[in-house]
Amino acid sequence: MKTTQLLLYLLILPGMIFAQDPFETMDDAFTEMESDQLTLRFFNALNGEPIPAADVTIESIGTYQTDGEGKILFPIPAENDTYKVTFSKQGYVKAEFPLAIEAGTIFFNRFSVSPALPLGNMRIVLDWDSRPEDLDAHFIKESEYHISYQDMRVSGDGVDRLDRDDRNGYGPETITAKKIDKNAHYDFLVHDYSNRSRQGVVYLSRSKATVKIYQGSELLHMLTIPRNQIGTIWHVFSIRNGEIELVNELFEHHSGI
Ligand SMILES: [Ca+2]
Image 1: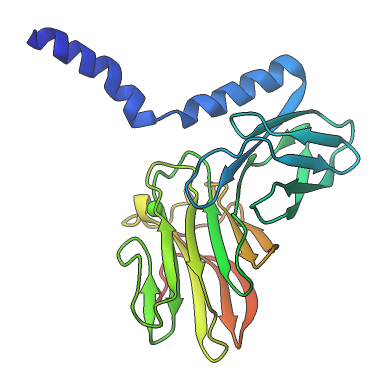
Image 2: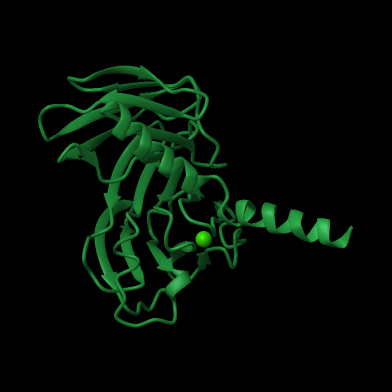
């Protein structure tokens, strides 16, 4: 009996540890090779679930509907270019973003889309690849509070929160701010928790991390992490006097963390 149980654990555990995502990535690569098509995948930024039956238009390529896995497949265009993608589904922000296709491939094909937001709300969504396993989003209101996995809800002005902490690759890791104080200074940082004690490493830069800033009914900004840089902290943006200032720099140390 015990031997049987042990065997069962040995069979089941690796599947639990690696979840299903690495297989999705392998599936995508296999399907793309077989069919000369590319894949985009769309997820709900609040819970990480795939979004089915959404309309996705890729400029000068076509319009597609996501399947039950939140996925579309489209033919590889003949020309390397940046194409405008429009995602729309009732109940979600209508998201428009650029998609660069280079040498017949996409740099990163996972997009977490925010459910519709009340006017004035801001939602910051971090997606990344399978490694490092644990990146952390930090949203800091100077002299007042610091939201992260360590303190998901703060009482300060009581309106900002971490919706989702992801620890096994891919994200999304999501922070919602119900109100931005026009007199305050905010910073948004991404910390490579998995490699936090290492110096001179490029794992974060290789993570394909992408941050989307949604506000009200719009996707305001989409930033991709700078490539080939050393550091375990990505300072993505600040907010001063209610205005977003993009920073997009990597650091080994940062006073905010
Ligand atoms: Ca995390």
